[in-house]
Length: 244
Image 1: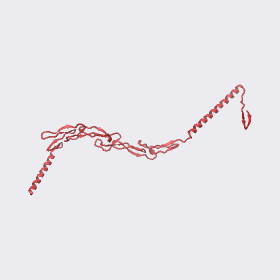
Image 2: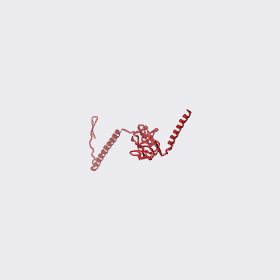
Image 3: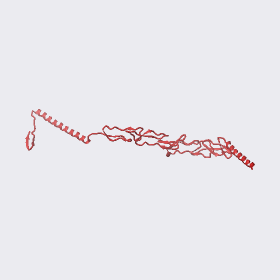
Image 4: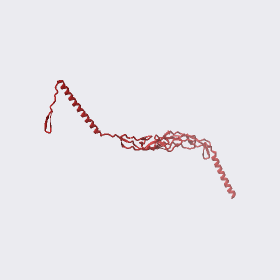
């Protein structure tokens, strides 16, 4: 019985050693198919026919938007990555038989899932709210940084720095807020009153000027004829008639 168990153990050990030996036998540039170690296909190619005891591996190029970027023993190439604009991506480097597509970020987006050479998913840059200013503009790898405006300053969200509120010289109609400037007015008489005053003053000056011109003209005419004609003026005052 003991001899039988010893024989079983010996057989198992031999089988394990043979299995290990067969695994070790294939080189780094080979792949195993059954008992054969076949040469790998180079990047950009896939296996058309596996090797046999008498023939080497048959390889063909990757086609139709497929690729393989490493030596391989695969019978199919991998499908090239699609740079989806819906994920904020665009093609940075097109797919080739020996390399996958490299995606970059669209304008106004930053990468959320970076790869060695590109990006797998992106997100649109944040927009600063009214009352905030843009502290750091977004890049392809970082989002926009927004900061609240301090006291007595404002920004509509599109500025790179907050602007100071206008100090009203006469009248402040609306005070400034973090998102809007102060609204100022002018202390003055009503516009209609100003216009009426100007017109009345102009009218009085015109009448006075015309009257003075008429009087001077009559005086000059009187001197030229040697007689100064003075008109008689009759008027009533308190029911009593006076003649000048």
